[in-house]
Image 1: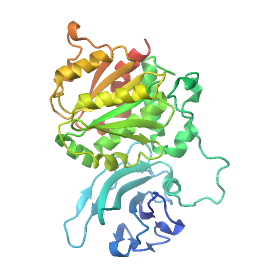
Image 2: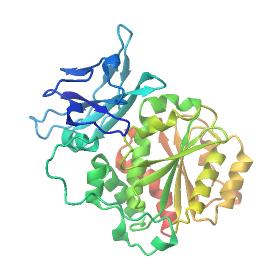
Image 3: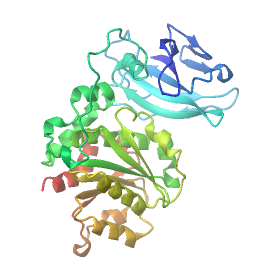
Image 4: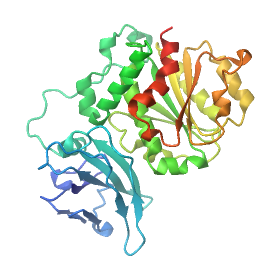
Length: 382
């Protein structure tokens, strides 16, 4: 494989084509590449560079080669012991992987693990970051369909969903995953049905390692791939559950790489108030005036700490065209979610549960999506 680096300005793009540092251009403004080593001489990096992206790519002289086991990156400063990043393995024909970023923060430098794969080669990655690899630009840029967030969009047909060419252009690594999600929905009888997809992520202390090891990032990417089948705006609102003030942002086809790692650092660790996060999702769904049902995927690691409030919220949304899917990670107290529909007196027809295990990324796409959309697809097709 080949190792390279990109120097990015504050806009997330290279300043010029010279900011791609690789075997044909091995040094630029304090960043150099020698073999499989990238050296960043931090004091020499210009103030206009905010991020250095570390990339591994398949040797272009070996067509057909792809990554399966992800490359492992070790970052060290001086003689300090290195920190090792080991992304999950790849399964979608990735030929390039962004391993990590060195970025400015509060007057200093930090390192962030990313682990994002591309199936479009080094040229596709370079284009995403603004490197001109083709002197002939496309006749027209990819266009996202109008989001279905208001009654004015209610007449859109199944053909209006995000077209495959646009998905291939913006997020080629998600194409195969999105197709698996579509097949899983078809098995439930919910083909061509639409829904606004939301994602709630637990930010409890017990989740720290799952964020650091890309498990949560990989999970969010699978949800984004599902949204391409159900929604047409190429984005998913993401809510981080921590305390009484959850953070709401979004993950999109054009920014999903490393997005969870970027966002979750803005949220304090703590015992997540899942009910507060659920209310935030419902309020957003109502505020935008969406015409399609909402599919809210709630990742959980332990039972809610205010169960009466939690049950009351479920009851209040029974007729609101909102389906709640609780996805269990790890080995916490998940029996509460499993048993929500265990008794007739406490049955919620708009609630489902899927136990994804400690590492959902290790679950094959077909098995994962069957668990993710099974109950929801049945509810949606009623």
